[in-house]
Image 1 (cartoon, rainbow, N blue to C red):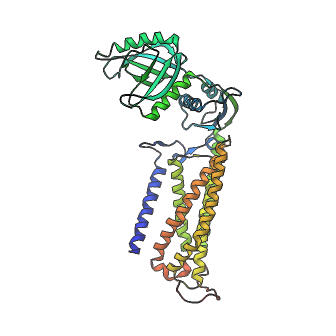
Image 2 (cartoon, rainbow, N blue to C red):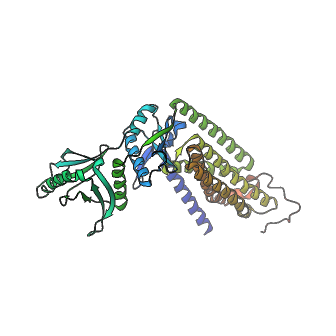
Image 3 (spheres, one colour):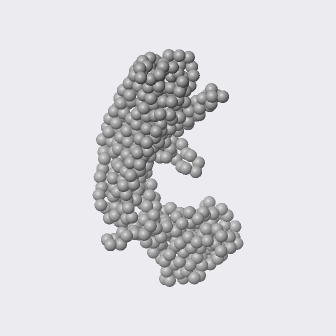
Length: 452
């Protein structure tokens, strides 16, 4: 039964490592319900400005003495995101700093003026009469009505009283209400035709919603209904509001990292990490022998799993993030060393390899657990303070360290332990010297013999 359990554990390890390898080495793919993963960079990882090169901008939102509302900030982020998408930036990053600041990172963009001009434009909402040429309105002609978001007094999410489905409610200014009434009456009159026209709301050239008019809107207020979820309606209201109430933004700082400098930093970081890894693998194999070789395998698989997690989450990898990852790599090695030292102590008092391994893991676990929990708490504190400031390096370091430490605990307790248990069940268990140095030397103060 125990042997069957070990082989099941080995199968689970193979599956986990196989999935991680597939996620990492397939350049790009789409995960249903999650989105696209992958990039043009090494292993499809998302690289930050200091590695990929590009532009970083920090903006202050709102006028002095007046903090923007949560809805205005969400609308501002959405508007800027749509504008940046037109630049063709592969992996833009737009983060909120506190209540009224934005950190915008544009990898690969070194023309800061182009980025500033596009981001600084005011959002424009248009109300359009869509003339449909067929029943499904796949072919149509848009006719500008002359009405914009400036004519809209309010847009907010609500619920249909009859169907309880989410809808978007809006109210127009008095001057625009009469013009809107005439247009909706005209659109409504086409509902009995083969190709009923639609009312469309367009923000910065993107159609937010296009729907038929169920009844003429004569009072200047109405609803837009469709196959919306509650969250979609909320987002639509935010987008419409942001078009109507643009939030003034003021540039605080800007910086540019040359692409060649970022590539050089990445090369140097990879060389340093590769040399460090080889030295660690050599030391582990030379000193701890079979145990060190198994730990080396687990360490390589640990790297594979962590990088796959970076790609799947996804994590924007910066130089600081690489430092956090390499630090967690050292902690993964440290966990194995704690285990092997306890294993060595048990072998020195004459226990069998299998029993010494079990006791060694049990005795090492409290130290591994406490050390890693302390590091996790520190990483969470760094993330909390880093995410509230413009210091993205602190946040990147904290995220990479946190993922690395959690993964190192998993690899030490599950992968390393099960691999060693499988190796110890083979003929290699007959020679304790194959597992750790000085295994044949007994502690004179300890009783000889096997038991536990």
